[in-house]
Image (cartoon, rainbow, N blue to C red):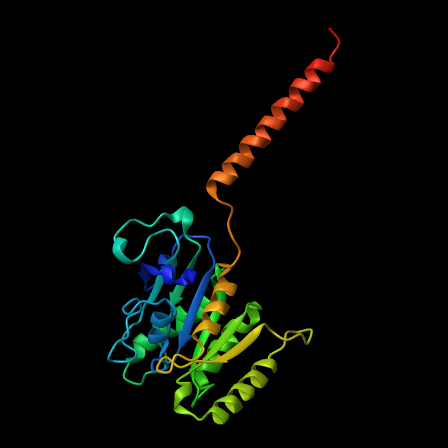
Length: 253
């Protein structure tokens, strides 16, 4: 079972000052309002209603956080989250680019997204969702260029791959990777940008995306069990006491 299947709602924020006071890695999902972002999050987390998929694209204007670890799932959805056991947070960023959103909302939205992806220290990586038929819209490029200077990984997921033929999808995949490879730092080194095909309808790319997200969040690095850590500390203390006793025995009477 994937560790991200443990995801559950954590908090929602509309201002940077309200961001979670946590230190665990955060993986942010971004994309246009009609790119299928919420659907992809739900499928990857194996939960139907985790991320809210509005019938009116662009309505959600908050950052929704989901915790991974620290709580049981399924029958025990209402048990409290043990913060010491939370491994990472998934941040569902507001979808962007929907024409019916008011000008003031768009401005607030833009500032929230830009400041979060540029300034959030805990943000470990960005997952950028793009419709395979329309990659790299102006707002997608803006998101890339906000985040690229951080030097952190971006994983692009080309959604709705079932809408194209296999050859068409592969061509878009190659073109997208080539464009991502064109981003370099001041020393000419490429950024850690990757891309894959994905289809919620045909269940294409789910395992690949899951593995990548777990890697970016550090979920495939096992934590020491609390009991083992306690035993190690106890052994270290005992060694220290024994060393002290040996030193005392060596002292002249």
